[in-house]
Image (tube, rainbow, N blue to C red):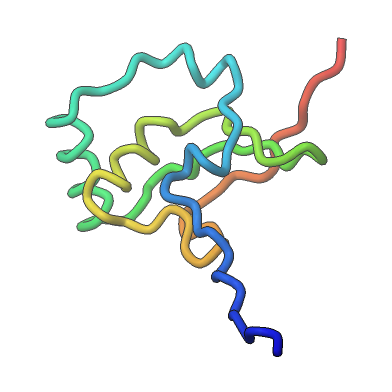
Length: 100
């Protein structure tokens, strides 16, 4: 007799960092202190996200070009950046990679 084990639910990302590749340009912005991240996150909770993060929708996956501190700030105060596999944030998708 075979056991009827249910397969585990798909793993939900714990952080936006599990989903996005960070573009080298985005790494140029210095990280904010935890206190500043929390203050920014609280402001985003109260007033909404004023500036969308910039993401390239590349065939290899999503590449974050701008917005590391905003995403960290949202996570610091419990805002769902990735909610049930969907983005729960404002995104500027009109970013095109340049080819030299």
